[in-house]
Length: 306
Image (cartoon, rainbow, N blue to C red):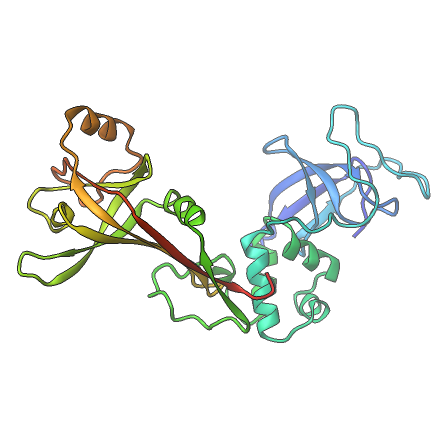
């Protein structure tokens, strides 16, 4: 694909062939007009670096192309294009789709060149997808899913309705212990956890609750006669985790400490006013329970190559 400044990049629907998005090419990274391009999208007026997939085509504008060897320059009111040195270099945090594509490719022992050939795209574009937090078009995802013998849903990280843990293990998994600071940070990112308590008949019970972290304490609302309320007055365990089935990765954090019922009226008003979540179970759940962790441990499973 080659383009000139002022040309329009048109993204077409893989089902109907009708345009679904278009934008003006306002910056070239290569003097010969090959991708990537700086595109000002007509629906948002934003300028982004874009590497076209198989669903994209160029609609020429009739403008004169830059002279041979010349470097195209965007207008003063536009974001300047990076130097003409090929696709942008890897970022510290590539997008989840790109990571899933790369992991699936490596699982199958496929080179980037072979995968790109199967998906009818350039190896440079595939490298861009794997290394950048990109947002590939539906047609691109369909091509990649077909090349990797998987599904678009899997590449997008779907499978939330499937019981976790049924995916394939990584070829080279790495299990790391998390320090207390990492555990506290991960606790603050979630809103649903599990508290382990003893039922009135002495049986151990694990109950999911909606929770917040306030002043280093784990707090949740319940009813006085509900099972989670049994945590008050005892040392309990509280667990939260995250599982990425498509990547066969995840982490878990375990907090252990004494639990108590929050009785101070001002503290209750503050917790209620500043809560980031409400009990999904609904109903009258105005009893606040606070867990003060005395021990925080956690583990994370990642690929040894990361």
